[in-house]
Length: 154
Image (tube, rainbow, N blue to C red):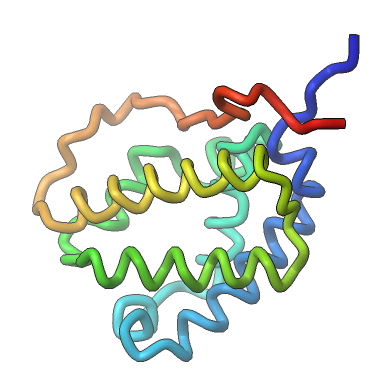
């Protein structure tokens, strides 16, 4: 029986996630709605986000072992006062970038990819509109898989 690849493997590995976030954040900094939120991000921000998403999708634990934790990622959003308009624009630009770089567009991968982004951005909004992190500091990194379809058609 064939082993089902992780979302990370199916996407093409770390170079793909790093390219995705590099090009995506270049767009963010040109966007009138998002630029004010992200203009002070560290030069490492896009790489950290690439490592975070890659780890969630089954890639190496670069983020959780070297750069932070899920709790720490949540803390970065506290007090940012993100809106639904921010969330939608962030998603739009990220999905546009995913198309531009040729991220897999099969229904199974894109369903899992978008499901995670929907979940994560909605959590970001909730936490950005509070002054306290209500999350357990020992909360594990989220892990995302193929979901109901169970993997790509091959």
